[in-house]
Amino acid sequence: MEDGEALDLQDALKPEVKERPVRLIKIERHDGTKAFLNSVIEMAQVVLDNMPPDACYKDIAIKLKTKLDEVEKGTWHVIVGSHFGANVTNDSETLVNFKIDEMHILLFRSGPPERPMSLNDEGS
Image 1 (cartoon, helix red, strand yellow):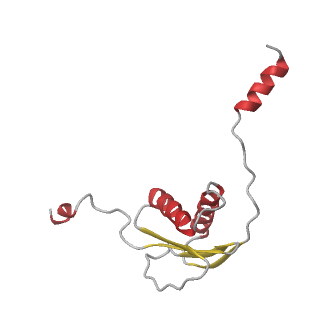
Image 2 (image 1 turned 60 degrees about the vertical axis):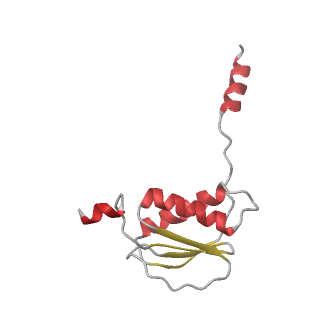
Image 3 (image 1 turned 120 degrees about the horizontal axis):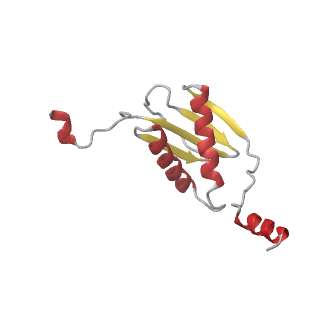
């Protein structure tokens, strides 16, 4: 095999890198650290990068909630839309309300970071 053929094969095996579109991000409110805020925004960007263009707000909320439940632990709530009101109680330093382009995202944790395995375990 010649060098030119080997390079072509290597190029074909490389994962396709999609360029992230430029998105306007506006932070409406947050009560956590800057590191947490940046982490949440990056999670949202990754979710959007991997969603089909015709994805609905509900699908975006489900993916983002699943990611937060895995990474940050606890009971997370994610609301995605273009027009909604909210009055929530959240754990301190877990609320983020921001906008990506014309899509609003409100997320927060409400509930213990570590849930018991079952209700029977609490009384022991």
